[in-house]
Length: 256
Image (cartoon, rainbow, N blue to C red; front, side, top):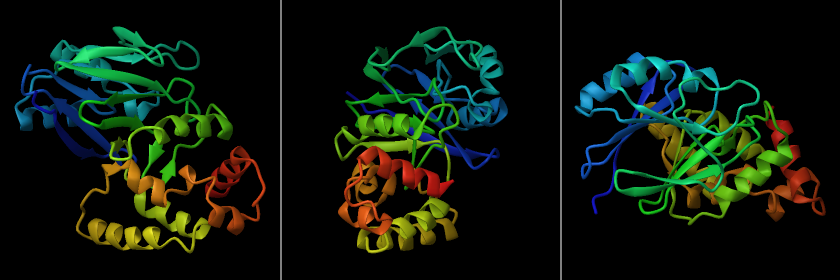
């Protein structure tokens, strides 16, 4: 079976990335979130793909502002979190919970609930292709702020991603990598993999090359928010015997 074609593109809203997923086999095309309908429609037109679905990760405006317009323009089916508290998302046709699965492009999409950044945040995982779309759950060497949940909640959410195969390819929603790296090296100053990655990142950004997507394996080696059990980080923080949640919370607080 053919793998999906994935097209990532930037749009001007807080360093956001947009993503289109296309199945050559069925002709179906989905987008991940939609903060700007015009930017997404331009990307669809560029690729020559007809939008059939919109997958929403959470309710924040930079992820949802363009959903209703793009849905109407394309008669697309909107799939999003089954969560009605806080700021309900308008236009959802199918609400999905943690552990739910659905079919798209002839493949199974798995829903992973990752609250903390917001209480409605979900990720879309395609095990057959080894790809996950995490919204603002995880960034390259970073993670989302706890706007609605708690650091402990985010840690539990990140553990769900941590448990995936290391070769999993991760698409997040923002280009925050350089600033995240500058923080990570303060927390993990002796990490040679992190130092090498910082050089690679600086070269990419100097040429305006995205640092997204990235593999889980790379994050496990360099992202302090996934490394609360690392002895070097614990020593750096003076928290050698602390609970992993407390170590993660301290890292999250220091990041601001």
